[in-house]
Length: 66
Image (tube, rainbow, N blue to C red; front, side):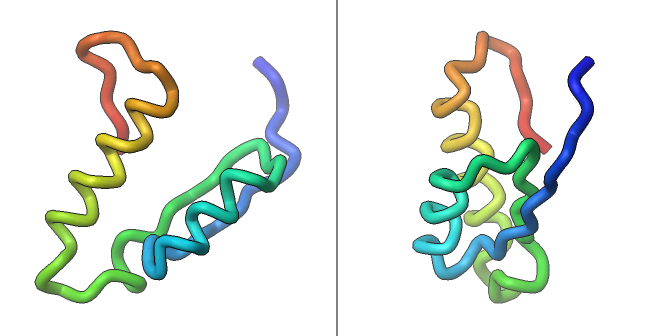
């Protein structure tokens, strides 16, 4: 297991900040879906983010994102 040297915390909104995070070479990116997303959009934001992360990672069937 490789040690994590850097962890980047990124708000889910606005989405341009998350796009920028993908250009940075952090060992780990934590997406804030709580404080940065309005209450009425949280479920939608969580589903969209999980879908995008799985698609980007080329995840196998049955994989999850939390």
